[in-house]
Amino acid sequence: GENVEQHPSTLSVQEGDSAVIKCTYSDSASNYFPWYKQELGKGPQLIIDIRSNVGEKKDQRIAVTLNKTAKHFSLHITETQPEDSAVYFCAAPYNFNKFYFGSGTKLNVKP
Amino acid sequence: DTEVTQTPKHLVMGMTNKKSLKCEQHMGHRAMYWYKQKAKKPPELMFVYSYEKLSINESVPSRFSPECPNSSLLNLHLHALQPEDSALYLCASSQVPSGSLDTQYFGPGTRLTVL
Figure 1: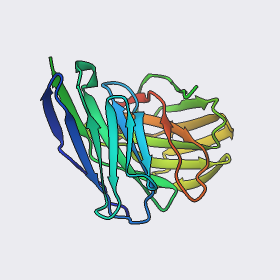
Figure 2 (figure 1 turned 60 degrees about the vertical axis):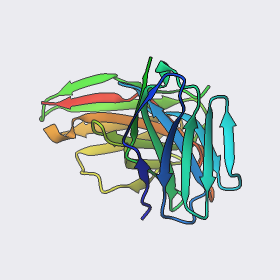
Figure 3 (figure 1 turned 180 degrees about the horizontal axis):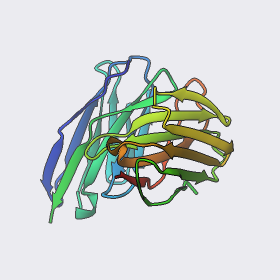
Figure 4 (figure 1 turned 90 degrees about the vertical axis):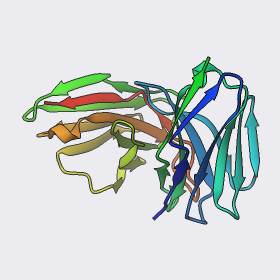
């Protein structure tokens, strides 16, 4: 089955700094990679996603990069703000009908 | 509108109770999902419905019984649960996968406590 590894498990940055979270996957057929943000007591919210036909996608302060050869993808948050503090999950598909989630990264942005 | 709603927000039940969780979406999605999430862990898939038919059951115990009465609603019936079933139960929906998975939108979850 699919194996998704996510690092780091915790990340603490100063407000205004950048944060990078990395995920690797095992299924070379995987072609869609979403990132979710989960705040305490809430459900995961999609923040950005990327399909395998592109290498990078940006949305304001958030970007995702994909390296299909190395089978890894990364979330980049620039100019971090305290409200970016949350748990972030990456996901990769398996068998085209289910997602496997990474183990999560708890991001703490210190004011 | 990308909203998935779930009721109730919180539920406390005894091991002999019968209760139901409800999920609703009005995005026209024909795939709906139940996930279970324990504290500090990622969501774990339980069930997938595609066009109102159960397509995936991830070997979930029979004390959890899903139901999809129509294309907008998804229920999870609970009976004779165990304390270890306490968790956040998440509903999600998406377009029906067709050769490639589509974006899944999650609801806020139901926090279930089994006493």
